[in-house]
Image (cartoon, rainbow, N blue to C red; front, side, top):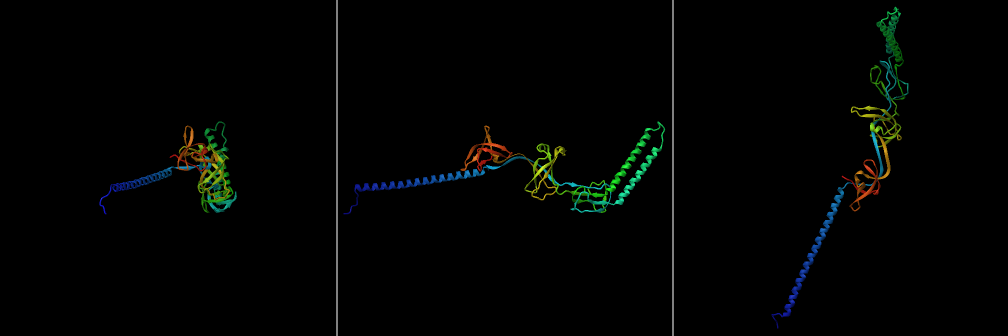
Length: 365
Protein backbone atom coordinates (compact mmCIF):
# COMPACT_ATOMS: atom_id res chain seq x y z
CA UNK A 1 0.00 0.00 0.00
CA UNK A 2 1.27 3.51 -0.97
CA UNK A 3 1.76 6.06 1.86
CA UNK A 4 1.74 9.80 1.54
CA UNK A 5 3.39 10.58 4.86
CA UNK A 6 6.96 10.13 6.20
CA UNK A 7 8.21 8.74 9.42
CA UNK A 8 10.26 10.69 11.93
CA UNK A 9 13.34 8.69 10.99
CA UNK A 10 13.07 9.72 7.37
CA UNK A 11 12.61 13.33 8.32
CA UNK A 12 15.71 13.15 10.46
CA UNK A 13 17.74 11.60 7.66
CA UNK A 14 16.68 14.28 5.23
CA UNK A 15 17.73 16.96 7.70
CA UNK A 16 21.12 15.38 8.09
CA UNK A 17 21.54 15.20 4.35
CA UNK A 18 20.74 18.85 3.91
CA UNK A 19 23.12 19.77 6.73
CA UNK A 20 25.90 17.77 5.05
CA UNK A 21 25.22 19.45 1.74
CA UNK A 22 25.41 22.86 3.38
CA UNK A 23 28.70 21.98 5.08
CA UNK A 24 30.08 20.59 1.87
CA UNK A 25 29.07 23.72 0.05
CA UNK A 26 30.55 25.92 2.77
CA UNK A 27 33.79 23.93 2.70
CA UNK A 28 34.02 24.34 -1.06
CA UNK A 29 33.60 28.08 -0.83
CA UNK A 30 36.08 28.23 2.06
CA UNK A 31 38.71 26.33 0.07
CA UNK A 32 38.11 28.52 -2.94
CA UNK A 33 38.49 31.61 -0.79
CA UNK A 34 41.69 30.30 0.72
CA UNK A 35 43.06 29.44 -2.71
CA UNK A 36 42.19 32.90 -3.96
CA UNK A 37 43.92 34.47 -0.98
CA UNK A 38 47.00 32.33 -1.60
CA UNK A 39 47.07 33.31 -5.28
CA UNK A 40 46.74 36.98 -4.33
CA UNK A 41 49.55 36.65 -1.80
CA UNK A 42 51.70 34.94 -4.42
CA UNK A 43 51.03 37.73 -6.90
CA UNK A 44 51.81 40.36 -4.29
CA UNK A 45 55.08 38.65 -3.42
CA UNK A 46 56.00 38.30 -7.08
CA UNK A 47 55.20 41.96 -7.72
CA UNK A 48 57.26 42.94 -4.69
CA UNK A 49 60.30 40.97 -5.79
CA UNK A 50 59.99 42.28 -9.35
CA UNK A 51 59.73 45.82 -8.02
CA UNK A 52 62.74 45.36 -5.75
CA UNK A 53 64.75 43.86 -8.60
CA UNK A 54 63.84 46.66 -11.04
CA UNK A 55 64.48 49.32 -8.42
CA UNK A 56 67.81 47.80 -7.50
CA UNK A 57 68.80 47.50 -11.14
CA UNK A 58 67.84 51.09 -11.91
CA UNK A 59 69.55 52.29 -8.76
CA UNK A 60 72.67 50.35 -9.66
CA UNK A 61 72.63 51.72 -13.20
CA UNK A 62 72.47 55.28 -11.86
CA UNK A 63 75.60 54.73 -9.78
CA UNK A 64 78.94 55.72 -11.28
CA UNK A 65 81.56 53.06 -10.68
CA UNK A 66 85.15 52.26 -11.54
CA UNK A 67 87.16 49.07 -11.50
CA UNK A 68 90.42 48.44 -9.71
CA UNK A 69 93.08 48.37 -12.45
CA UNK A 70 96.82 47.81 -12.66
CA UNK A 71 98.62 50.77 -14.19
CA UNK A 72 101.51 53.25 -13.97
CA UNK A 73 101.12 56.50 -12.07
CA UNK A 74 103.26 59.56 -12.66
CA UNK A 75 103.46 63.28 -11.95
CA UNK A 76 104.44 65.17 -15.07
CA UNK A 77 104.25 68.55 -16.76
CA UNK A 78 104.68 69.73 -20.32
CA UNK A 79 105.95 72.80 -22.15
CA UNK A 80 104.48 73.75 -25.52
CA UNK A 81 106.83 74.46 -28.40
CA UNK A 82 107.69 73.45 -31.96
CA UNK A 83 110.35 71.88 -34.15
CA UNK A 84 112.90 74.24 -35.68
CA UNK A 85 115.62 73.62 -38.21
CA UNK A 86 119.01 75.36 -38.19
CA UNK A 87 118.89 78.08 -40.84
CA UNK A 88 121.35 80.69 -42.04
CA UNK A 89 120.75 83.88 -43.99
CA UNK A 90 123.83 84.93 -45.96
CA UNK A 91 123.80 88.47 -47.38
CA UNK A 92 125.89 90.74 -49.59
CA UNK A 93 128.32 93.15 -47.94
CA UNK A 94 127.60 95.93 -50.41
CA UNK A 95 124.82 97.14 -52.63
CA UNK A 96 124.59 96.53 -56.34
CA UNK A 97 122.84 94.55 -59.04
CA UNK A 98 122.78 90.77 -59.11
CA UNK A 99 124.60 89.58 -62.20
CA UNK A 100 124.67 85.81 -61.70
CA UNK A 101 122.96 83.12 -59.62
CA UNK A 102 124.72 79.77 -59.38
CA UNK A 103 122.19 77.65 -57.45
CA UNK A 104 118.46 76.94 -57.27
CA UNK A 105 116.10 76.27 -54.38
CA UNK A 106 116.44 72.68 -53.20
CA UNK A 107 120.12 72.38 -54.21
CA UNK A 108 122.59 70.96 -51.71
CA UNK A 109 125.62 73.21 -51.28
CA UNK A 110 128.93 73.05 -49.44
CA UNK A 111 130.33 75.62 -47.06
CA UNK A 112 132.08 78.39 -49.00
CA UNK A 113 130.30 77.61 -52.28
CA UNK A 114 129.24 80.61 -54.38
CA UNK A 115 125.50 81.20 -54.47
CA UNK A 116 125.34 84.45 -56.48
CA UNK A 117 127.41 87.46 -57.45
CA UNK A 118 126.94 91.17 -58.01
CA UNK A 119 127.90 93.26 -61.02
CA UNK A 120 131.63 93.81 -60.37
CA UNK A 121 131.70 96.98 -62.49
CA UNK A 122 129.23 98.70 -60.15
CA UNK A 123 131.25 97.59 -57.15
CA UNK A 124 134.39 99.02 -58.70
CA UNK A 125 132.67 102.35 -59.36
CA UNK A 126 131.57 102.45 -55.75
CA UNK A 127 135.14 101.76 -54.67
CA UNK A 128 136.50 104.48 -56.95
CA UNK A 129 134.15 107.03 -55.42
CA UNK A 130 135.38 106.13 -51.96
CA UNK A 131 138.98 106.45 -53.12
CA UNK A 132 138.31 109.97 -54.43
CA UNK A 133 136.73 110.91 -51.09
CA UNK A 134 139.81 109.55 -49.38
CA UNK A 135 142.12 111.59 -51.61
CA UNK A 136 140.21 114.77 -50.77
CA UNK A 137 140.34 114.11 -47.03
CA UNK A 138 144.04 113.25 -47.22
CA UNK A 139 144.83 116.43 -49.13
CA UNK A 140 142.92 118.59 -46.60
CA UNK A 141 144.76 116.94 -43.76
CA UNK A 142 148.17 117.41 -45.34
CA UNK A 143 147.51 121.10 -46.10
CA UNK A 144 146.38 121.72 -42.53
CA UNK A 145 149.54 120.16 -41.16
CA UNK A 146 151.88 122.12 -43.50
CA UNK A 147 151.06 125.37 -41.72
CA UNK A 148 153.51 126.27 -38.90
CA UNK A 149 152.04 128.15 -35.99
CA UNK A 150 154.06 130.18 -33.49
CA UNK A 151 154.09 129.05 -29.89
CA UNK A 152 150.84 129.90 -28.19
CA UNK A 153 149.15 130.66 -31.48
CA UNK A 154 147.22 127.37 -31.65
CA UNK A 155 143.80 128.26 -30.36
CA UNK A 156 141.18 125.75 -29.30
CA UNK A 157 139.36 126.36 -32.58
CA UNK A 158 142.41 125.48 -34.67
CA UNK A 159 143.00 122.39 -32.54
CA UNK A 160 139.46 121.27 -33.14
CA UNK A 161 139.90 121.81 -36.92
CA UNK A 162 143.01 119.69 -36.93
CA UNK A 163 141.34 116.97 -34.88
CA UNK A 164 138.38 116.96 -37.28
CA UNK A 165 140.71 116.63 -40.26
CA UNK A 166 142.45 113.73 -38.57
CA UNK A 167 139.11 112.03 -37.86
CA UNK A 168 137.93 112.55 -41.46
CA UNK A 169 141.15 111.05 -42.75
CA UNK A 170 140.85 108.01 -40.54
CA UNK A 171 137.24 107.57 -41.59
CA UNK A 172 138.18 107.77 -45.26
CA UNK A 173 140.92 105.16 -44.76
CA UNK A 174 138.44 102.89 -43.03
CA UNK A 175 135.89 103.36 -45.81
CA UNK A 176 138.48 102.38 -48.42
CA UNK A 177 139.43 99.28 -46.48
CA UNK A 178 135.79 98.28 -46.03
CA UNK A 179 134.94 98.83 -49.69
CA UNK A 180 138.01 96.90 -50.74
CA UNK A 181 136.83 94.01 -48.59
CA UNK A 182 133.32 94.38 -49.93
CA UNK A 183 134.64 94.24 -53.50
CA UNK A 184 136.34 90.97 -52.73
CA UNK A 185 133.08 89.78 -51.14
CA UNK A 186 130.83 90.65 -54.06
CA UNK A 187 130.06 86.95 -54.14
CA UNK A 188 127.24 85.52 -51.98
CA UNK A 189 128.81 82.53 -50.23
CA UNK A 190 127.18 79.61 -48.37
CA UNK A 191 128.11 79.94 -44.68
CA UNK A 192 127.45 76.22 -44.03
CA UNK A 193 126.85 73.01 -45.90
CA UNK A 194 123.15 72.41 -46.36
CA UNK A 195 120.16 72.93 -48.62
CA UNK A 196 119.09 76.12 -50.38
CA UNK A 197 115.65 76.51 -48.85
CA UNK A 198 114.88 79.97 -50.25
CA UNK A 199 116.23 82.44 -52.81
CA UNK A 200 114.92 85.99 -52.62
CA UNK A 201 116.99 87.29 -55.53
CA UNK A 202 117.11 86.88 -59.27
CA UNK A 203 119.38 88.18 -62.00
CA UNK A 204 118.99 91.96 -62.21
CA UNK A 205 117.69 92.34 -58.64
CA UNK A 206 118.90 95.46 -56.87
CA UNK A 207 120.60 94.64 -53.59
CA UNK A 208 120.94 97.11 -50.74
CA UNK A 209 122.75 96.68 -47.45
CA UNK A 210 119.75 98.40 -45.82
CA UNK A 211 117.33 95.70 -47.02
CA UNK A 212 116.23 93.43 -44.16
CA UNK A 213 115.07 90.61 -46.46
CA UNK A 214 117.70 87.85 -46.68
CA UNK A 215 119.07 87.13 -50.14
CA UNK A 216 118.96 83.39 -49.41
CA UNK A 217 118.26 80.90 -46.63
CA UNK A 218 120.38 77.80 -46.16
CA UNK A 219 119.10 75.04 -43.85
CA UNK A 220 120.84 72.02 -42.38
CA UNK A 221 118.34 69.14 -42.92
CA UNK A 222 119.56 66.95 -40.04
CA UNK A 223 119.56 69.76 -37.48
CA UNK A 224 115.93 69.62 -36.32
CA UNK A 225 115.55 70.63 -32.69
CA UNK A 226 112.62 71.35 -30.42
CA UNK A 227 112.35 74.84 -28.97
CA UNK A 228 110.00 75.88 -26.18
CA UNK A 229 109.67 78.51 -23.47
CA UNK A 230 109.24 77.40 -19.86
CA UNK A 231 107.70 79.59 -17.19
CA UNK A 232 109.73 80.19 -14.06
CA UNK A 233 107.92 77.53 -11.98
CA UNK A 234 108.68 74.84 -14.58
CA UNK A 235 112.22 75.88 -15.47
CA UNK A 236 113.27 75.27 -11.86
CA UNK A 237 112.32 71.59 -12.29
CA UNK A 238 114.56 70.93 -15.29
CA UNK A 239 118.25 71.16 -16.08
CA UNK A 240 120.57 71.13 -19.08
CA UNK A 241 121.34 67.62 -20.30
CA UNK A 242 118.16 66.11 -18.86
CA UNK A 243 116.45 63.38 -20.87
CA UNK A 244 112.82 63.95 -21.76
CA UNK A 245 110.19 63.13 -24.38
CA UNK A 246 108.64 65.13 -27.19
CA UNK A 247 105.00 64.65 -28.09
CA UNK A 248 104.10 66.07 -31.50
CA UNK A 249 100.53 67.01 -32.39
CA UNK A 250 100.86 65.35 -35.82
CA UNK A 251 101.76 61.87 -34.52
CA UNK A 252 100.38 59.43 -31.94
CA UNK A 253 103.85 58.63 -30.68
CA UNK A 254 106.56 60.09 -28.50
CA UNK A 255 110.14 60.87 -29.45
CA UNK A 256 113.06 60.57 -27.01
CA UNK A 257 114.93 63.82 -26.54
CA UNK A 258 117.68 65.45 -24.52
CA UNK A 259 117.88 69.04 -23.34
CA UNK A 260 120.82 70.85 -24.91
CA UNK A 261 120.17 74.37 -23.67
CA UNK A 262 118.28 76.05 -20.83
CA UNK A 263 118.63 79.82 -21.06
CA UNK A 264 119.60 81.67 -17.87
CA UNK A 265 118.02 84.82 -19.30
CA UNK A 266 114.32 85.50 -19.10
CA UNK A 267 112.00 86.70 -21.82
CA UNK A 268 109.14 88.87 -20.56
CA UNK A 269 105.88 88.92 -22.53
CA UNK A 270 103.31 91.71 -22.76
CA UNK A 271 101.62 90.44 -19.60
CA UNK A 272 104.82 90.68 -17.60
CA UNK A 273 105.26 86.88 -17.34
CA UNK A 274 108.84 85.64 -17.50
CA UNK A 275 109.78 82.56 -19.51
CA UNK A 276 113.05 80.86 -20.40
CA UNK A 277 114.14 79.37 -23.70
CA UNK A 278 114.56 75.59 -23.63
CA UNK A 279 116.08 73.63 -26.53
CA UNK A 280 116.01 69.84 -26.90
CA UNK A 281 117.65 67.52 -29.39
CA UNK A 282 115.02 65.18 -30.82
CA UNK A 283 115.83 61.56 -31.65
CA UNK A 284 114.02 59.80 -34.47
CA UNK A 285 115.01 56.10 -34.45
CA UNK A 286 112.15 55.09 -36.76
CA UNK A 287 112.94 57.83 -39.30
CA UNK A 288 109.45 59.32 -39.16
CA UNK A 289 109.07 62.36 -41.40
CA UNK A 290 109.64 65.49 -39.33
CA UNK A 291 109.52 69.03 -40.68
CA UNK A 292 110.21 72.52 -39.47
CA UNK A 293 107.34 74.14 -37.56
CA UNK A 294 105.65 70.98 -36.24
CA UNK A 295 104.01 71.84 -32.92
CA UNK A 296 104.03 69.72 -29.78
CA UNK A 297 105.15 69.57 -26.17
CA UNK A 298 108.19 68.71 -24.11
CA UNK A 299 107.03 66.12 -21.57
CA UNK A 300 108.80 65.87 -18.20
CA UNK A 301 108.15 63.18 -15.56
CA UNK A 302 109.05 64.30 -12.03
CA UNK A 303 107.91 61.15 -10.19
CA UNK A 304 106.64 57.76 -11.36
CA UNK A 305 105.63 54.33 -10.02
CA UNK A 306 104.80 51.38 -12.26
CA UNK A 307 102.55 48.31 -12.24
CA UNK A 308 100.41 49.19 -9.21
CA UNK A 309 96.72 48.77 -8.36
CA UNK A 310 94.83 52.04 -8.58
CA UNK A 311 91.37 53.61 -8.53
CA UNK A 312 90.15 57.15 -9.19
CA UNK A 313 90.61 59.61 -6.33
CA UNK A 314 86.86 60.25 -6.45
CA UNK A 315 86.20 56.77 -5.06
CA UNK A 316 88.07 57.41 -1.79
CA UNK A 317 86.63 59.12 1.27
CA UNK A 318 88.10 59.56 4.75
CA UNK A 319 86.64 59.04 8.18
CA UNK A 320 88.61 59.31 11.45
CA UNK A 321 91.93 59.51 9.57
CA UNK A 322 91.16 56.29 7.70
CA UNK A 323 90.53 55.82 3.97
CA UNK A 324 87.44 53.99 2.73
CA UNK A 325 85.62 53.09 -0.46
CA UNK A 326 82.10 51.92 -1.16
CA UNK A 327 82.62 48.49 -2.68
CA UNK A 328 80.00 47.14 -5.09
CA UNK A 329 79.43 43.47 -4.26
CA UNK A 330 78.54 40.76 -6.76
CA UNK A 331 74.96 40.58 -5.48
CA UNK A 332 74.46 44.30 -6.09
CA UNK A 333 74.83 45.36 -2.49
CA UNK A 334 77.22 48.06 -1.36
CA UNK A 335 79.78 47.53 1.37
CA UNK A 336 81.96 50.10 3.12
CA UNK A 337 85.55 48.90 2.81
CA UNK A 338 88.70 50.23 4.51
CA UNK A 339 91.76 50.63 2.28
CA UNK A 340 95.38 51.79 2.43
CA UNK A 341 96.43 54.28 -0.23
CA UNK A 342 99.82 55.34 -1.55
CA UNK A 343 101.12 57.55 -4.34
CA UNK A 344 98.69 59.69 -6.33
CA UNK A 345 99.08 61.58 -9.59
CA UNK A 346 96.16 63.86 -8.74
CA UNK A 347 93.55 61.80 -10.60
CA UNK A 348 94.19 58.22 -9.52
CA UNK A 349 95.62 56.78 -6.33
CA UNK A 350 97.70 53.70 -5.57
CA UNK A 351 95.95 50.96 -3.55
CA UNK A 352 98.31 49.15 -1.18
CA UNK A 353 95.73 47.16 0.80
CA UNK A 354 92.00 46.51 0.88
CA UNK A 355 91.08 45.91 -2.77
CA UNK A 356 91.70 43.33 -5.47
CA UNK A 357 92.21 43.68 -9.19
CA UNK A 358 88.88 43.93 -11.02
CA UNK A 359 86.73 44.85 -8.03
CA UNK A 360 84.29 47.69 -8.57
CA UNK A 361 83.98 50.78 -6.38
CA UNK A 362 81.51 53.64 -6.33
CA UNK A 363 82.57 57.13 -7.34
CA UNK A 364 81.35 60.13 -5.43
CA UNK A 365 79.25 62.63 -7.37
